Length: 142
Image 1 (cartoon, rainbow, N blue to C red):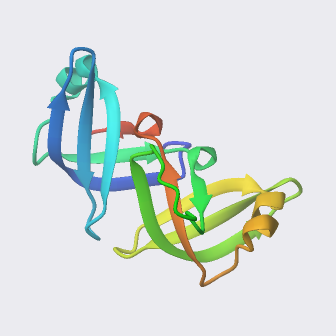
Image 2 (image 1 turned 180 degrees about the horizontal axis):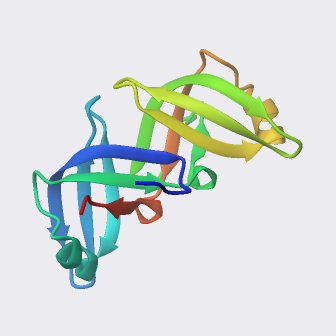
């Protein structure tokens, strides 16, 4: 599959919670992390999403928020993936920051150069990639 979203996580559906309109789909990654996707009930039916199905979770890099210190705060965003910064690629206005998760998956985030400076982002630093369940697009083979 080719897609413009840099973040493409392959995983297995571990839980599906169906609501009146939307559904919550939990995807287990190989490193033990879980991604939660909020999609419509109709999409669950159309894609025949069920426990055990392999899916690809897509998240565009600008949807990723990087947190280096929660300072005691808790966030409503369901997806909070801890890892280590492997690369910071500055551009004219924005930078791409790559974070490696414990299972080896890479998360690419696009943040402003000011944010890189404010957070002191550098290779080897612990960081958490945060994104809302509604930012996740699910894809299946076939």
